[in-house]
Each structure stands twice: as structure tokens, then as C-alpha cells.
Amino acid sequence: MLRSLQARTAAAFRSKHAEIFELQAIIPQAAARLSIPRCDIINLHWVSIFLTPESIAQIARTHAPVVWTLHDMVPFTGGCHYDNGCGRFEGACGKCPQLVLPRPNDLSRRNFERKRRAYATIPADRLNIVTPSIWMAEQCRRSPLLGARRIDVIPNSIDLKTFSPQPREQARRRLGLPSQRPILLFVSSKLSNERKGGQLVAQIVERVRADLPDALLVTVGAGMPAATVEHRSLGSFSDDLDMAAAYAAADVTILPSLQDNLPNTMLESMACGTPVAGFDTGGLPDFVLPGQTGVLAPAGGGALALGEVILQMLKSDYAGMGQKARRLVERECAFNVQAQRYKALFAEIVDRDRSR
Image 1 (cartoon, one colour):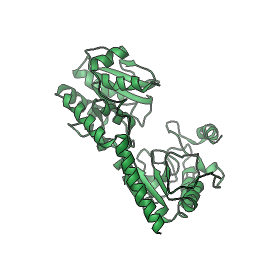
Image 2 (cartoon, one colour):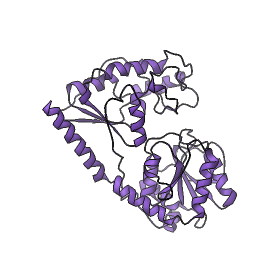
Image 3 (tube, rainbow, N blue to C red):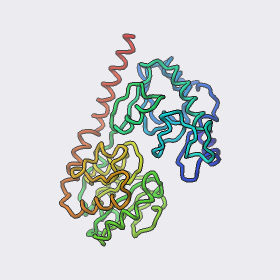
Image 4 (tube, one colour):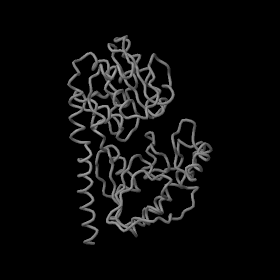
């Protein structure tokens, strides 16, 4: 019901190009009555709309210490899941550029103040933050809402058996892709998404094709990139094995995101032995090590700069990049690695809570 309410109401508040925006200010300010069994610790993940700030505060105060894993910025903003670099969450939001009518006391300010009041009731050691990327941890530390809390970085894990290297020719035959052309893969649930760089893809590919005219853009996702360029659409996949084949079939996966936490597309591509190219922003620099596991362009350099570094990579002997990429995700993103890191964190927090 709340998701339906958000969907119906969002259009009245959001600007044309904004992504999902949290409408907590129009939801009754009461803690949800949750049936939580007796436990030592609670790990929250993406709970937007499902839990109000008051509910989160009540859980932390009365049930058990909370570890909150942040998958986007909304826990410490006035409603945006990514702020597109505006930085207004460092104050108290308001005048939100993602709203149709930004005002000092707009929806973002009211959301922000509601979170401030709720979080202030949680004892310092009862709310702990985990972020998958160093970048998200840095953003969180700048927040007056959560910056004073304990913040740990634990990367996400992925299925390293499903997403694993396979012969490129085999993967291309499976998907009906040409065997000889250099393939640039772009993956997004919505290919025109501006935060994901959908509006830049055509320019990136055109820069590569200026020197490598056989280069082919292959896309996985709904819709089309914002500008047209010769490409092969594979549509949307429901089978992870097909997705793994798409990564393995590519020479490089391009992630032109302007802001992102720790994209699964990056980790999955690297697990399949395919290097990644993107901007040095968000969580990409955590795993895309220039010249080793992929290439990065300056965040403000634009499409041509990213196209240029991709071109230089494709002209070089880049075969070893995929192998190094695979080894890195094996070391950092295996299920048991993530589990052990959370286990150690949980044990420390539980011991501290019991002694208190």
C-alpha cells in the first residue's frame, strides 16, 4: 500500500529527471508494530518506505543493537536516494533540486528533520552503519544525521560460481554475437538512466569507433541509451547464466555512472574476467584499479575522456586485466569473506552491548 502511495504521489513532487524520492513526510509519524523475535543483533538493509525513522529508532532502543547496511544515500538525505552531487544533506536539505517546487521548508527539509528527531533518540552504541563502498562511508561521515555513528566498510558478495570466466567464443555463440568484433557492454535496468550514464553511452562508443570502427555496443536492460548508436540489444535477462555469458562475451564493460555505491554490474563483470571502464567516482575506484583490473577517467572529463581511455585499453595487451579482476573479487567478494566480516562486527557489537 505504501509503495502504491509513493508511486501515485511521486509525480507531483519530483522533477522530470529525478529518480525515486522518499515521501516519508506524508506517512503517519508512528512506529510500526513489528513482531521481532528475541535476538542479539538486527541487520537492516534497504528499508525505505517499509520502515519509518520512528520504527528504526524504536527497534534500536528496545529490541537489539542495529547494524544498518546502506545501499544508497537515502538514510541520511531528505529523500533522494542519490543527491547527484548537490551536497545539501550536509546541512539540513531544503531547496531540493530534485523536487518540482524547491523551497526552504520543502519535502526534503521535512523528511530530514523527521529523521533527525528519530535518530537523536537512539543511543550512540545502538546504531551502527555498514557501507559497501569507501565512497558511501565518506558521504555518510559528512552527514549530520549519521556521521557520528560507527561506520564500517564491508563490500557486497556475489555468486562466484555463476559469475565466472568462460571462453569468449562460447559466450558469444550462446548469445548470437559476432565472434571477431570488439564488444563494449553496457548494463542497466533502465538504459536511459542519467545517473547511470545512459546519456553518455553513444558518445563513448562513437569515440572508440572513430579509431576502432568494428567496435560494437551490446546492451542489457530495458529501453535504449538516450542517444542512438549502432548497437545490439539483448533485452533484459531473468537468468543469471545468460547475464554471465554477456559479461564473458564482452571485451570491456562500461559503467559511466555519475554516482553509484558499489555496482553489482562491476563486480559481476570482474568475476567473469571482463575488465571494467568507468569514471573515478562512487565505489568504482574500490575495485577498478587503472591498468590492472580496468580503466578510469576523471569524473568531470565527460564521455570523450572515458571513450579515450577505453580506446587505449583496447589497443593495448589487456588480457591480463580480466585475470586480475577475477582474483580481486575472489579475495574480496566471496560469500564466506563477507560473512566472516559481518560475523566479526556482530560479535564485537554484541559483546559491547552485553557489557553495557
